[in-house]
Image (tube, rainbow, N blue to C red; front, side):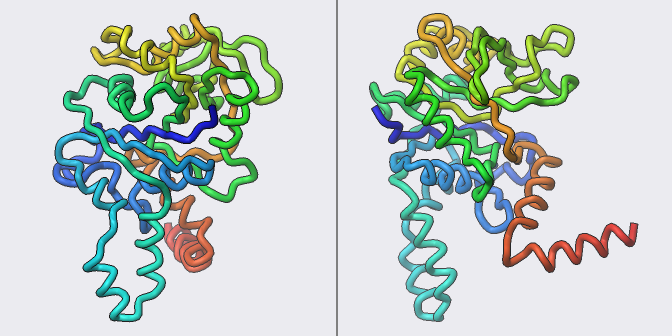
Length: 291
């Protein structure tokens, strides 16, 4: 079956961005002029996915509102002749069909994905972590490449990148098997391994394409690292029972899930924008010269 559905987990508490996230969902913090989660929705839409379920939680209704129509605002913008702004907010509502479910208890990443089972059903699906932004306009777009591997192999696919060895403990690392180009067989995965025991420097980076077997695998998973239901543990079951592959991506992935990464991503995206790049770079050079 073609990949037509995507899950975007957005139920976390966002404690790294407190106090801002006391009342604002972390996923709604703007990265330049759009909330972080919109980049993930746009990425899914670029890959031809038109059915997206966002897994939220109590207090995160602003995410659903963002992708809904805003008639009063639209009428005001139209009346004031602000055509560009009007088109921008209407475009958000037309990216895809957006659905919402809730993760009632904070039980981990795997449990958040499982919350979307009722919507996805027995279909394959993509999972996009909104903390990771894959910028548009790169030589290769990640999700379409992963879907091509899925279609070819008929098995789940995990996006990985090679990271510095001293940083591997922040990620899930794969045990690699045979490799053909950018496609690597996964023999196993280890969640946040120590530097001394890491099986490779190939780290999972928040993009997945799953066969429907991911859901029973999560259901059979017990609490793992951090006392939570870890998606990595469910993927290990899928690997053992059905096989899985990694796609080694060498393009840009911007991590907005921490303060430093958020600032770096803002700079990178601003420098790629035709409307901002030149004046922003001039300001940045002046600022650096002052130092």
